[in-house]
Image (tube, rainbow, N blue to C red; front, side, top):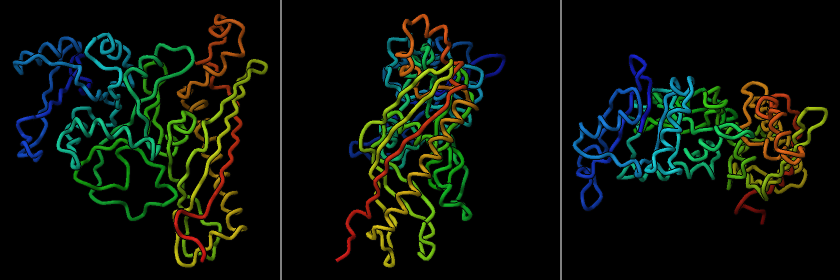
Length: 370
């Protein structure tokens, strides 16, 4: 389902259905495997009623995998639509929420899967990539609803878009390959829709977006990562490799501590990781102890800086506690009323941060000295 701003204060609701007749018994497709219809109405309920009349079938929202809001409508606030959907017993709390940088209808048009026969399978699988890339997060309407009704955190959603690139940029900087968002990536392919980055909300209104690296930082704190890739400048200036790629694996859950000192939140974040160097050439000597110590220093410093930049941006610029640090602050108050009076969501912007990282860098996976 896609939700856009319509004409005359109406909503434009787009429904994407699986065209089961286009899928043969062997799984091959004879034509497009989706059918897309749009309708304008003053509410979701009215739109569903109209589409029922148009299709001659009753739409069952229990099979809705994805709810896409356009950036334009999300900026104005989407609490009414979220509450209406949650109030519908057919909507599953596990349905993903995407904020599209283009019209939701256009995003759905460009979401034809190329590695799956059914678009529903693609919608099922793509959020799972977040655990080994960190470039997005498995954001659901159930979580979104809980967060807009919470006193300790704000909502977040998957950032979607349509890439117009015909070919990757030749001038892209390897260090900035993670600094990308949906609609602006060095990717080219038949499917144009992308899901990279996160949409950040204050209450129910969209206030900004996170790029891929910031999304990794968000996921580190959420303990939702299995692994991710970090690129750093090669400390060895004599090496032909200008950059090093490292596969990084969390060793344990990130620990968060919040203290309130003179009315100011002080937030400490502690994480430990194991990193393995994946960029290897014949002249590489990453088993040397001194080399590993130098690389370890650079990796720790870069990820620490990325984490601090992320935390300061969400608190000072976006003023949105999407990591729910508020729940860790609860122990600082004797009663729930004291916490409510502190007004955490508006005081979060005054937070100070301390990030402590312990990254143990190992040489690689299979290549070792003989």
